[in-house]
Image (cartoon, rainbow, N blue to C red; front, side, top):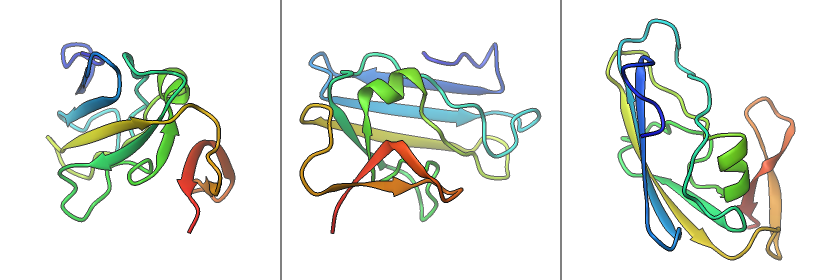
Length: 130
């Protein structure tokens, strides 16, 4: 458990495989008081800092609960800067994310930096070039 519902108005759990190649992240919002749609990023644990992870949302229903969805993020960034997510305007919103590792850290050939929602380049997010 990364965030306890007894200490915050959300719960966050991560289950990672022994070889750190895959993980599933569960995010549960409780009552919305205090965090709005964008709670503080959650620092993950149990990933490989030398690998990149492709993030997929398993229950999005047409709404991405994170800007990391369908992007590639370094394990070191997820374990130091955290995983950013949003909870949409209602109590008890939730999301499930799958993280699949591949390669070692460093941009693969053809990778480009993507832009964050504010429009400035983010050194934490890599996407595959078209």
